[in-house]
Image (cartoon, rainbow, N blue to C red; front, side, top):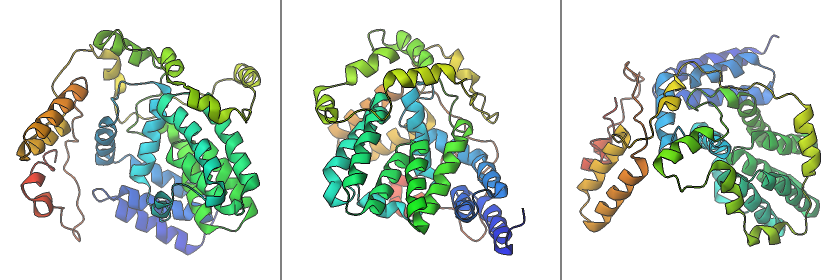
Length: 360
């Protein structure tokens, strides 16, 4: 398909910008701008993935994610958290900051929306997938009662996207775009659809699992810790039961089970060959040397002059990450734009910034 000249110029600009250190997300944003206008533009979609395959982008995202969860933690909800965090790290959508400041949604249905979001958080944080069925029922109630269904749908779509439920986000935003002419919603929809379709091959995210690797590791680390299948049941509480009492799940559990059995599972194993994830299955579950980023953080804490507090934070850092495995940086140096000198952390943060760039 032939596109207007400005599309090809924008693609060239995205490729030019995306070659420099930490600019891959900026280049991808230009591609998403194109996809908002031309959803079937394969050149734009492919270029996003190409930019995301930059070695330093992979490294930076792996390190950032490891500070939230270990790479060997293959519980399904942790995979969604990785996707959600990656989306936040890499998104340059202009409207996202405005949405962050207005977390509650339209005031007339804010209490209903809050109840729906709590259900989403039950799936996001605790792995209770049943919560997602109730979340949509609650959100549908809010849409029906809202004075401004456009703003309500936008808020719902953003919440789904922000928590890594990209298919649900695409449904909500697609509904919005079918009813209203909203350029911001189309732009966010384009980005969300890309993440929905490429979630299985984000190069810095380990292959999806069922929690068996986590259970194996925890058997060596702490045999008393709840297994993946037990964790969800322990997380449910009376507050949730009260919140969903007036609603029915968007799909009956038994019917969902029948669909799951009758539809062949789609093979969405990670397509990435840029990271050899085999080391995850060879882990011996023994405490080891801290990752480089944790060592740098401890050095910065040691410079703080607040005695007991820093010592306690250092102790927590060691306790939390003694089973985290170091992520080696790429061998080739970062490629900085000649028009933008490298960021000097010591200028901005003084002595506290001296260790920030040790991995380069």
